[in-house]
Image (cartoon, rainbow, N blue to C red; front, side, top):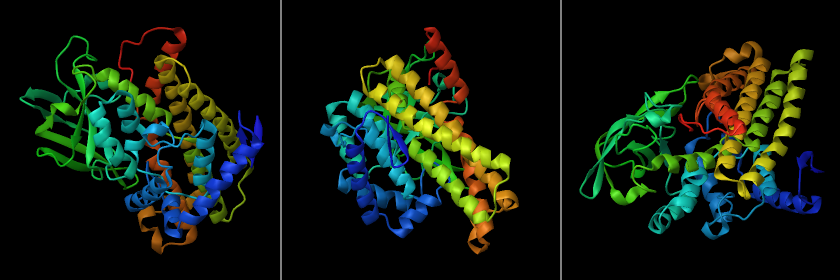
Amino acid sequence: MTIVGGEVMSFVKASECQAFRNEVREFLADELSHDLRAAGRETVGTHSAIDACRRWHHKLYKKGWIAPAWPVEHGGTGWTPEQRVVFERECAEQDAPILFAGGVRSIGPLLIEMGTEEQRRKYLPAILSGADLWCQGFSETGAGSDLAAVQTKADRHGADYVLTGSKIWTTGAHLSNRMFCLVRTRKSDRPQNGISFLLLDMDTPGVSVEPIIMLNGEHEFNQVRFEEARVPLENLVGSEHEGWSVAKVLMRHARISNTTGGQLHRALNAVRRTLTGSHMTPEPGLARKIQMLMIELEAFDVLEIRCRRSVGGNCSDRQARATASFLKTVATELNQKIAEVGMQIGGPYAISDHSGCEQSSEEAAIGGLATSKYLGLRAASIYSGTNEIHRNMLAHHIEGKNLLVAQM
């Protein structure tokens, strides 16, 4: 192992790591404006303010750094797992905006792996440029962690599927112009069978979006309704009725980048700002919690590199999915622990309303932001499959058994 700039890095020479770090720092110093940094610091959900997201996405796209996990031939950077960790850590240290990038992180890699050549030509360039923003239409009122229970219907009519039903907890549906979703195309005794994976335009007649306001007052989630919305047959990814297998591949990509070390370092930096703004010396118990979080985060940095190397290597699909579940579970729970300590540091100011803190004292503004981050992260251990489900999957993986219930 090599320690560079206070970080634990493995399998990489210190000189190579430092040269890349210097390149990233120079880019961030040139391109991150004050307002972009402010948007990054003020982020309380899964992404920063959308205007800042678009501007930062465009800067990364122009640099050729928008898709670190993609193959070079499709517009990726060709970075090693260590370089990706360095990049994310430096972005965190400089408060770069958190992108609304489900296209880059999940549907893009899926189309590279399983899409048709026509689908790749149509969708990948717009994902890279940021012209297309994608949301995920998976969960329904009766199909959350048990995703195989989806009931949104897609019946064939001529050259189209006709969709009827609804999706819920759809992050960023009000911001997106495209969606990837799971639909029921055939009834089956085994619920995983008869599901298909479709791509659709959000401005399709019959598609409507209704907001769901979060605990912290933010609008991130939505309910999306389909009333005889027509989707062309060529928008099917994979085989008809075999969408469950497609979705498992997508979730493998999504979970490995669900909560990264960079996001955790952002969260810990926010805790430090809260501590500074509170003008207090933490009592011994709280100080120990902060120290333990720092230790856990250093350990997570190493874990993340190992997991990314494993998934990028020659491991089986089953091993890759277990690795993604493990990383998602550890990362989201550590993120919640960090946010909880931040709220504790806020003390009585943590009850401040973040949305009205512009006119408040510095302590109230910082405390209100800490609580808003805490509330916004309560869902982190639920979305992309609850952590309880992931623990069950990991147990079955360790035991070498096949899990017959929903493995999402």
